[in-house]
Length: 352
Image (cartoon, rainbow, N blue to C red; front, side):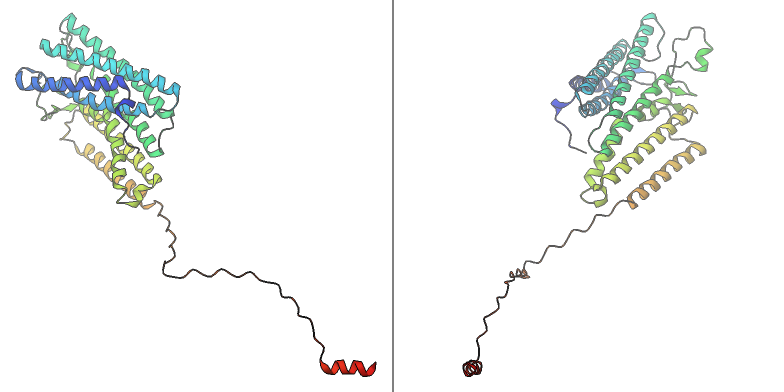
């Protein structure tokens, strides 16, 4: 992979959005320390902090990918799509932070007309963001960028991230308990089989008693960073392992990493929809995870084994051995004139 571009060559609206999220992350970290309020079983500033950190990585990676697009038309369409992502993401974060300041739940909240309007506005921003990301994914699929390994890592990771974002649409569906109510204050949930706000894992808050769609949502969206990171690691190891310098092997490894990541994303989504905690899978989920690991390992070994061996370089001549002398040009021989002997001269005189 080529070295990272300079900051000024990246998509500027996304860069400025990432900078604003860095400021919000610092502010939210202060809120975690100074504000002891708890909302849905978690510190009230935990959500804007996690969203801000996630958006920093997402925006900067997308800005880099947009800088790879060739051609004026593709760059122009990509610029507008990236700007839509930046503006809609900023709007979503403003709404989330507003609800935090009010001490109210941002997602799934229909308790009051204002809360319902906020959540509907968030839904609009998410749909617009997803459609803009879809446009960028199509542009990346059609573009010829860098080497083949990097190109396919960028393309496939953008598609997986698009699928990860789409998991959010599953969360807005009402649960069976909510459907049984006449006018529920909360419509939608990220937990499956459990109520949101129950026991959760440290830092992430992911449920430890039931399924949690946030896991697949998070994992899928961050394919945008993790799949290209595999190529960065391969490039770093190439000086020590000659095979990794082969473009064909790097392409195979990029495809294997993308396939393994996509399979794991599907598995995490399936596990959550079946109401299973991440760290408490049943036998079927564990067997599927083991199959993914074994197939990935086998494919990796096969890709490395079938790599082309580097051709030996010719041995230079030793400086101590003398160079062969050049062949002298052949000179044509000229016949010498014959000189008559003395007896022959005497014979000629006697005959005369």
